Image 1 (cartoon, helix red, strand yellow):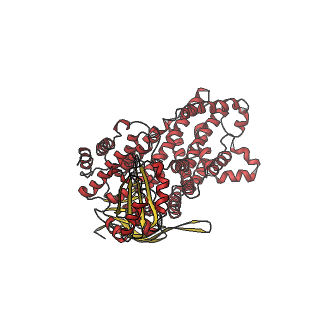
Image 2: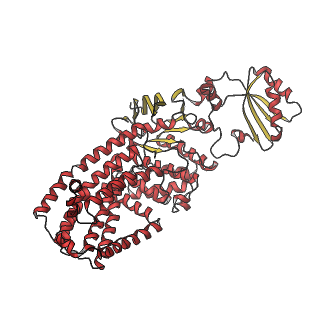
Image 3: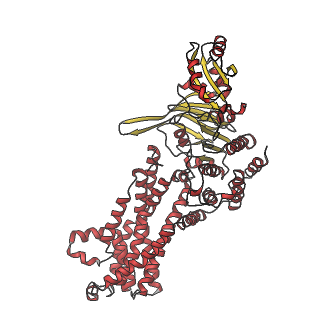
Length: 293
Length: 342
């Protein structure tokens, strides 16, 4: 037997026993995803420019919105802070809803999805979690970038660490609720394919009704729209987030508690999301469309 | 179940497209022993890939059941996935991350398969050297040739040291030397380490050379299971004459015209031109009369031999299934099946 064949056989005589943790595997998924994205140099440059341009646009829009109008609606009279917090958080909304479906769409069209499903479920889940962390790492960079650029341009945002702690809690809760929707969307993608348009529409609707760029109270004059807005979880998350960092309201404020209650109602979506995802995955296995796009 | 690595009972998969139903795998029952090198042979679209995808739990069967290493593909898919190394039959290497290097692709999947880092590094290093990719290990996969990607996919299937390997056309796209090395290595995995390999191919040469047993699948149905020798014995009634001429290819048309005009010749099974040699195989009604008649018909040409020949697996398949399998050549070989005789 040739020496190279003998050497190649020898390495399989040893059975490994040490196992990595679930989180270590999830972080590996994150690490290699970052490596992949680092090869897209133009994308990285555009993302960086995008952060600065987005904030600059709202900086100039701020000149058009009078401080008195914002004050009359109960916000601090700083449109830039209002907009920066809105667009920063909307990035998390997009990530929560569309990241997984977008990633699965990419894996399916690249042809790597079946290889990932063919590993055992625990390891597949660690891959999924890694991808979710990747999405939020990216959103967080975007968020921090917009806040920093916004503050550099004069946006007045609370610096109280306790309020920031509360804001992060609200952010995580909002993400958890919307990740549930995102997981359902990802499951639907595996089965039905080409759902990008639907996801963009869904995110835009949530962004519009959530009041990313205007105070929600303005919708009160258009009752049906206002009620639709109040039914969407993002509306409540964003409202709490802004009130925390612009008005310095604590979670115990009666309006904050009301918004919190609304958000918590949607929390079971995350459990439901996993169940629906699994169901769609099995449907795709049944119909043989796992690897098709 | 203990002595068998893979068992399938009436495994059936039907694809529906509107009102159309396509039975891709039709009540396939197979038993593959532990430590067996088993070939699943059939033309394109026969159901080979669909069958293997059900075994690796990527597809749910419409009927029937299968067990891999004793675990049900329906009830215990997670256990099945842990025990199988699967290489998808896809020569373009789409199943890899093209914007990661070859090394990173392997490390990533090793991590997902829960292989400890030091073990993974050692395996990857040795296997990359074995398939002669060590100098290209840190290049992005998008810069790899098809053959390099196939090698990488094969290594990936082996990384977690599974006892059962399901390999869909693992040498398709490889050059001659690499295909030979891979074949030797796979055979040793079975002989020395007791691994079980289910191997799909439409390459007769490879299947005949490697497999302990083969199943022939056509239109989703198994039409034969046995050793390569048994399949040939089963179709011994095919009477074949092989004609070897030391001539250029430009005389081929005239040679064929002369041969096919003979009433003892049923049909031309294959024809090959190898530099200054022509090799033709024909099925005949009777050896005793056909050989002198053919030799007589080809008078004037430089005849090297006209002799009785055994049916190849390809011809046996043709007899059993009534359709032709496309490739008769070892992967990447520039000469024909008969090249070794030169």
